[in-house]
Each structure stands twice: as structure tokens, then as C-alpha cells.
Image 1 (tube, rainbow, N blue to C red):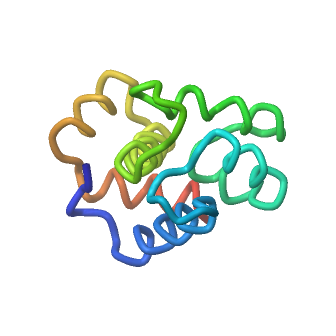
Image 2 (tube, rainbow, N blue to C red):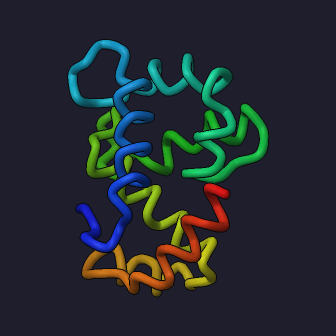
Length: 118
């Protein structure tokens, strides 16, 4: 689910990261693709999804794979990044879940993006 208030550049960078991880170009990031990419993309993955160590970032895959099919769709990837930005902006998990399901405050998401992405 795409939030209309996300800055196009932020969304573009996120999509570029998704496409970089999707090595076989099938439109999904498999657990193997994620695992192989963690080391080379540690900083970006940490900013968008959390985790400090390679192990923590690697283990995030299971959390991001909401439907449990062993791969991340663009929707799962984007929703997880938006939720992370909202948490950085100070929203509770319940507030974040509600916003992802509906819409998001432009000021809150921009604050979260600036803090998380730098």
C-alpha cells in the first residue's frame, strides 16, 4: 500500500533498493536474495527496516514477510519501511498499524524520514 504523502525521491530510493535486492527480477525479494544482500546493503537496510548488526538485519526478513510465503512483495517491503519511518517519528505500534492501513500525517512521515534517512 503506497502512502500518497511519501516524497517521490524517498519512494524512488526505496524502490531502487528493492530492485537491487531482487536479483532474478521476478518482482519479489526471496529470503536467499535478502540474505546475500545484507552485507553489501547493511546501512540502507538498517535505515529503512531497523537492526544494528548483520544478524539482526538478516533476521528481519521473517518479520517483513507478512504472508509467510518466503519472499517479499513490493507491498510488504514498502509497508515495512513506512512503519519504520512512523516509529522513528514517535508513533506507537498501534498508531503505526492504523496509519499503514489508512493514511499518514505528512508531517509525521517527513519527520521520520529525515531522522531515519538523515
